[in-house]
Image 1 (cartoon, rainbow, N blue to C red):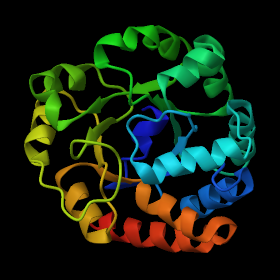
Image 2 (image 1 turned 180 degrees about the vertical axis):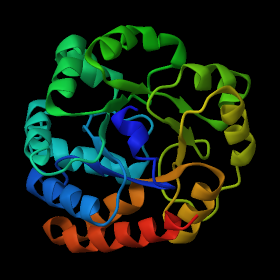
Image 3 (image 1 turned 90 degrees about the horizontal axis):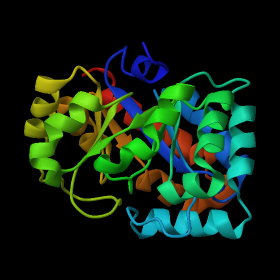
Image 4 (image 1 turned 90 degrees about the vertical axis):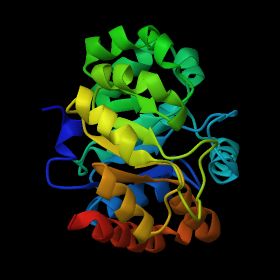
Length: 258
């Protein structure tokens, strides 16, 4: 079983996202450790990028703050090395194809494997172009995590058949951000996935409340939350750690008994 699959082995997964370096890497490290203690099953670490096309204003702001603060990919690799001294749960990077290209794809992916990153999510990488990275991911044992969106329609089965680690189901059209209501028929997307693969699938984009997390985890294998956590970091800065910890605990509790 891949390390990522283990995140889904004990019931519904809660998957928090955090942008590395917002407001600084020390706060990121403290948040990740608290998230792990509060029951997060897998953590997505965002590597900031200057043009994050899939992100709404909240995560765009986090990217800008992190980059302005001098965060680099190498510093984030060092952060993960430090975290891996005491954090054992699965961790994946979420970033953009350009970040991997500019670093050097083989160097990037081999470093991920060396520091204990279990997978990478590249929201701007079309499914049809994943061969640019897939052979390297296989070479180094890093899962290239696929996304399906409401617009994927007749491609969902194909994507599910080839998916690795877990499948990221995008709840709604548009960019990341919290939403008051999620109207997409996600159950039908999940059922197509189930017909074609036994891969775990988790729903992200727009989830911010325990009720939403419970509902989304109810139709899938887990809930992913980013913008709501980033809002706490934007609000409290270096003092955000206890607030993030409390929030992650509430969200995990919401999906725990499903």
